[in-house]
Image 1 (cartoon, rainbow, N blue to C red):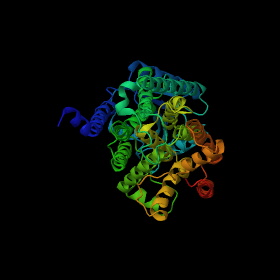
Image 2: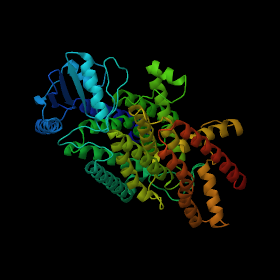
Image 3: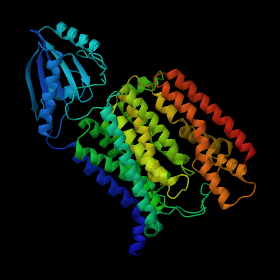
Amino acid sequence: MSLQAITKRYLPALIIIATLAATLVVAAHRLHPGTLFYPDILMEASDTVQVGLLKQGIRSQQQCETAALGIKQAMQNFCPTCEILRARCVDSLNPRQQLLLSQKAVDLPVMHIPGGVITFEADQRDIAEQTCREAARQAQNSGPCILPDSTQMATVLSAVSANQIEITPTSSTALLILLKLTLFSALVSCAVCGLLIWSEKWHAPFSHDAINSGPQKFHATAVPRIGGLAIACALAAAITALDLTDILMTDSVHGFAMLALSALPAFAGGLAEDLTKKVGVIARLLLTMAAGVLASVLIGATLTRLDVPGLDNMLQHWPLLAIAFTAFAIGGVANAINIIDGYNGLAAGYSIIALAALAWVSMQVGDQVVLLASLTMLGAVIGFFFWNWPSGKIFLGDGGAYLIGFWLAELGVLLVVRNPDVSPWFPLLIMVYPIWETIYSMYRRKILQKKKVGEPDSKHLHQLVYRSCLHTIAEQYSKETAKQANRSVFPKIILWLMPVITVGTIFWPSTFTLIVLALLFCMAYGLIYRKLNREYPK
């Protein structure tokens, strides 16, 4: 066997193994980022009560000392009669401090904040608890006081920080930085796409999509299907920029980086298929589910509630079941995005709207990690969209579809896990189109057509919409009318989706409203599908 034949045969495995190895190396580095310095401030509020504030680690000792000084000044301004007992930076935590920052139950009243924790200590426990409750009542944008032995930890929307900027709904400085980061991500993605298109003659044997090779292939010109590389490069560039500048909260950037790290197996499986056409659907699904398990381990992205009686109890009492269920859901959503990636701009345009909805709600609840990850991916997809619609000069490919699908699913999981006020049906409604498309396709093939579930066909909703657009433009088929119909599919489907997503984004806390909207969408989908299938069967 020649070297070329060996390389072609084993290239998918080599890509996947190399990516997983890189994942482990980056994980080791990110999970052990070197010495961190923790602002530690203690204030005596009265003769009997002491209030402490412990912040998450900062890489620079100078920045930590500046932050500690800023917090000290803020405490003195809030309580001029209180005495500051200490304002320091420590480079190691004792076991109790580690428990405090991990948001696990401890032996004193606490208030958790994004990036730290406030403690209340007194000789008499009831005085400390009363002070904690009163502080939580008076503090603006603050969560409840967590008493000893409590089983639930609250998320608080604001905290004091001197140098690193925290993301809140009213933080104009932080939002301006995020908008710049979104633009930076878009520019990187757009530039990489342009480079891939310009250099396609060198990588065409590996990267070009096949022409008319199946019922879901219709384009007449070979096009690079490695747009996912541009999106991955944009995410990597954003993480690097955040690491170098330290302009946002360290724990927020760390969570964002861990999410990107978790996505690597899903992206690797899709990219290997794009370059070799030899990685099956099952292999890609398993890799994406493995990425979901990795996210559960690294960032705690494990669903434990769906507002479904009985199921919630099982997810909460059986952690392994919760992880498996979450991984299965992640794999399903990622595959669903790949299914709707059929026409110029459709998958990318839908993802832009879904990411914008997730970003809006995460801003309302003050979730820094989800907001940061949503806007960065939003920029990356916009940069790709510039080349993908209407001209279709580059495709997402499986790598891009699985990466975006994994990202959307994980952001939905994190938003629900980290924010009890967000209904678990909100991300489900935002992603109801690709999810229902997948479920209905399985039903159509298995029940109606008596075929294998994974057998491709030309009966997806977007394909029926394409045929309707083609018929509207001209009675006779031509390459030009096909291009016009292709670029018309995205705006038509998005026009149907926008009312559902918009209303869902307004009613994100209401499970009942979101369930009704999801049912209405499924009913409308069925009516539209039957009408189009009857009028344009082929």
